[in-house]
Image (cartoon, rainbow, N blue to C red):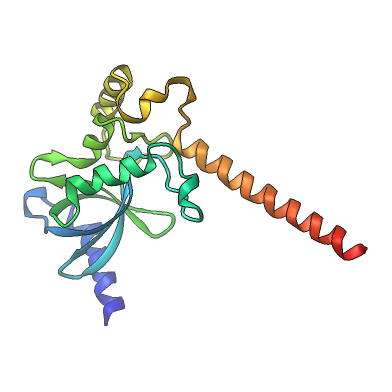
Length: 189
């Protein structure tokens, strides 16, 4: 039964938000996982939502101490804004990895945009949902950069979350290959 409730919640998000926003249901933010990833619960079940249009510094789950700079600050700031609160979602469908994409709205405040304004998220550089207008996001990012807010204080040392993830995956793969080579060498003796 729980499986069907979750499916129903997804269907409501996919199809329900194409109607007027004013009539959209409220969801409780139950957990903030990263600066751009949250868990919500509603009448029909629980689901995970990726904040559309933004990319925040990455918390490295295998070893949190090796997280990207400002990852914890981004998560904690997002939690301070919405943890335990009732929010509305402007849905933009799904994404690989079984996450829904959406803008989180607390009253009249766009939380995704607030993350960019605080310098704790950049405008997402990959595929953007079709109807998501990034003009205000890009303007807010430029203003946060100019003011050196949050992660922008790093200047030339700043690495985008997308590039940082690629580098971490490459390091992990190299370590795995090196470990295999060393293991082969130790078994030949």
